[in-house]
Length: 133
Image (cartoon, rainbow, N blue to C red; front, side, top):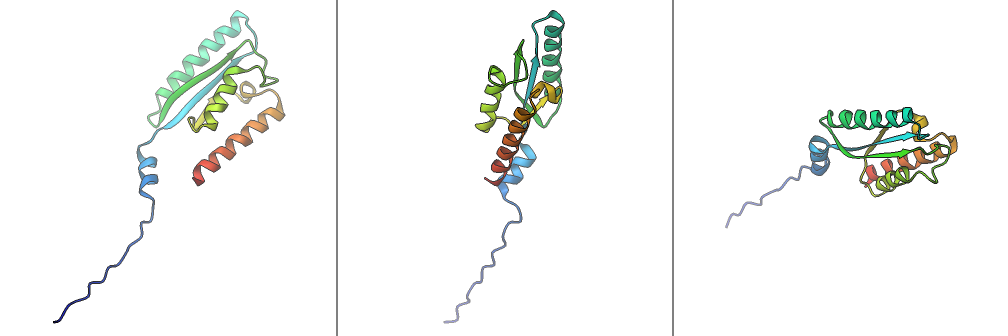
């Protein structure tokens, strides 16, 4: 009998389908960090304005999803030790629940240069680690 041998040619995908879907449809999980250093009325108004601004800003971006606004009121930015909301936000980043943090200025994030660099480097390493996974 004359049987034909079928040949199968495998064409490898050029892009991982899961990654392609993520890029197209998933929103960035965005958090905002607000901090006012005193309890004075003027500062508390600034806090309310920051919260309103970030809520509107994040919700206005179609590719962003608001996952939280973390805010420390009346707490100095010179140390992260007593900044409960800041530390909670960092824990959420470590758990992979936040993709991006926005804040009014670098001084709101940290007034201490060593702390600022420490957290920025840690967050950058998390991004690199998550992109490799």
